[in-house]
Length: 79
Image (cartoon, rainbow, N blue to C red; front, side):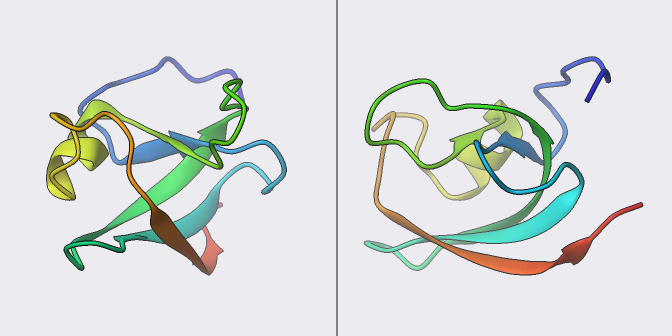
């Protein structure tokens, strides 16, 4: 969307959701969740549905694992 990436913001990349869509990402194996705003396209790896910023990945405790199964819940738009 043109904004500079900030790994400390709660943002994510998704292929089809509109920019500025706000999504709750729930990690299925531990129930941790985070609210992020879609601000980029991607992911470009087969089988992935969303890429999270570093801050968002830390919030749901997935940095060590790298990938995990999640559920997405659209909660609104920002802007």
